[in-house]
Amino acid sequence: VGDVDGYICGDDAITRKVLEKARTKLKVISKYGIGVDKIDVKSCTEFGIPVLFTPGVNHTTVAEHTFLLLLTLEKNFLFHTDSTRSGGWKRKTGHELLEKTIGIIGLGRVGREVAIRARAFGMNVLALSRSWDETFAAAHAVKKAALDELLAASDYISLHASLTPQTRGMINASAISKMKKGVIIVNCARGEIVNTNDLIAALKSGQIGGYGTDVLDKEPPPADYPLLKLPNVVCTPHIGSRTYESVVRQATTTVKNLILAMNGEKPIAQVNPEVPVKKAV
Image 1 (cartoon, helix red, strand yellow):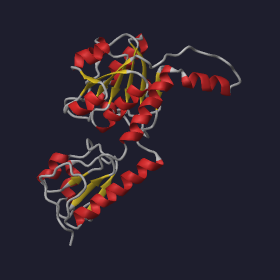
Image 2 (cartoon, helix red, strand yellow; image 1 turned 180 degrees about the horizontal axis):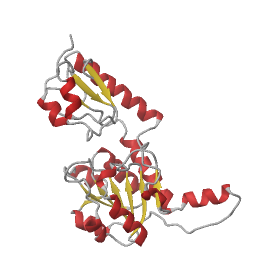
Image 3 (tube, one colour; image 1 turned 90 degrees about the vertical axis):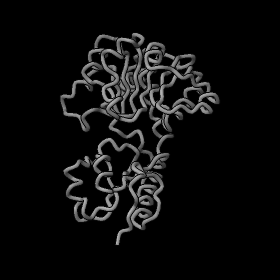
Image 4 (cartoon, helix red, strand yellow; image 1 turned 45 degrees about the vertical axis):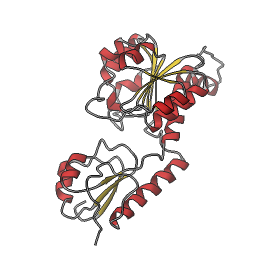
């Protein structure tokens, strides 16, 4: 990285050690995606390196994936497909989403799209967010709730918050104890928002009825990763944002960001806007 002017990154861990080698030449980091928790943004700002990202390219896709995971659990989808594929005809009774309450933690772009789809299913929607869009909430009958209220009232909890020191491990034994017995949690945000050991204990006891996730605290997981051994867990390999449509949007915005910044022009989106872009010469 020390030999390049511009760097497009995916989920690479861009630490201070990396940046110290890059600081003399690197003009810009363009993130393929929106999550920048693996980038030491503070050090980038200190070294005068703009960090760009691509908001608004995959929120529809991730919201759709959220309901894929939720419906898979509530309709016992994998049990039924496995049964029929093996020549059986076993059936389990599932649940409707109608009139159930979903609590959305993080009402950003993805969270808002989840709320819209939840209302289409006839669900009651509670939400918790750092920034509250009153116009959106009123238009879609989304009720603002404090964390404890959301945990206690929700049949389903959908995680869409960014990973920060405040959200890391927020779904822990204490939070789980405040939830309805049998609650289903869906995580299309970051695996580290959940305390995995506390989650496993709650899944085994039945306090949590099911966990649908696209993210883990270890990616890829080791072969003996205990969470994936549980029958009430559905996991996909961090592909919630990957559709042909969203990949094109994401890749195009990533490259546009890079080119704009390297030409000394204002990028589409910048994590640390206080850092000026520098034309590559």
